[in-house]
Length: 365
Ligand SMILES: Cc1cc2nc3c(=O)[nH]c(=O)nc-3n(C[C@H](O)[C@H](O)[C@H](O)COP(=O)(O)O)c2cc1C
Image (cartoon, rainbow, N blue to C red; front, top):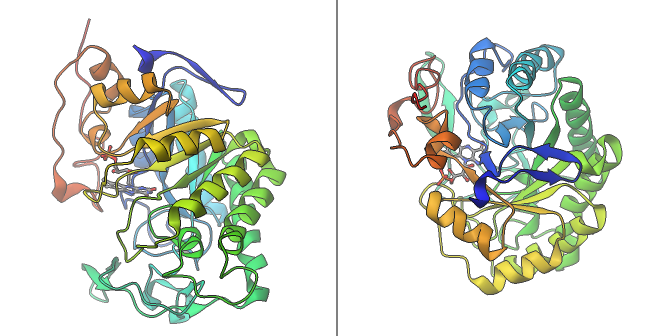
């Protein structure tokens, strides 16, 4: 099977092509958004994936948009992540940290001193909510508010936050980082005409809207090495008020510019939950032509679809999200066509080990 062939991804040796997709699970130690031994157990259980990508991890206080998600900007968070990388490496896994700035998908109650969240432009994402813990300690979903547009001279500071976070990830023992350019968060907000109406060099033309992504990726690659950098993009996902008529040429230009940096991979996020439009082959061909590194695809794949896309040559690796929740040994189950367990949707976010580390592998052989 194609899924079980090893891959040398820009000098990183991967045992197979099954990737753990990044999944927020909201189980950090509070206060401080610090990863714990419980998180280490969760990732160690999934270390038979050829590559794991962690849950989205905020690069700064400003980059936070949901309660209980981890950060990578404090000394305690770095120490917490060291437990995770150590456990994964003991099981011979490979793991990248997903670097996240949410931009406008946040709320003042999650920001330092109740400040407004920042974004390319002061446009509120309609119909978009974030998860907070209210003053009585109860979890609650709450509408995003209108963000503040970043001043041009603030943008380099945000890029430097990405660079510091990437350096922190390497000190925490990660094999690399994935820059989250997908699913309606800050970088994606810069890419799209409906969330970016700037009139400076970061808005207007396609070239200008790609600039923030390329500058972040260049600065991170220069600091930690391009072979340790991947980028996630979601051209067909419109969830979080992200429908942009120019997104396809914008993403193709981004892929060309990222190709010039020689980064390890591009990761196509094809579905945010059930927002999963069919991706035309014409786009897949153009994307492949634009980028010569590895391509990861994610979004409602099963064994058969995964094999097909690898055989067609449109992808080198396939990431699985929801199937990994209740099947920590997913590669083995796919390989031997074992039945897949269903997850409990009530325990996806928040809580302890229940619905997190208590899904067990299936005995086989
Ligand atoms: C519980 C959950 C949390 C998620 N969190 C993230 C995240 O932190 N970062 C990200 O890029 N995508 C996130 N996603 C999207 C997944 O990475 C993936 O693209 C999506 O689940 C589709 O793949 P699947 O059909 O195999 O689940 C999340 C999905 C789920 C189900």
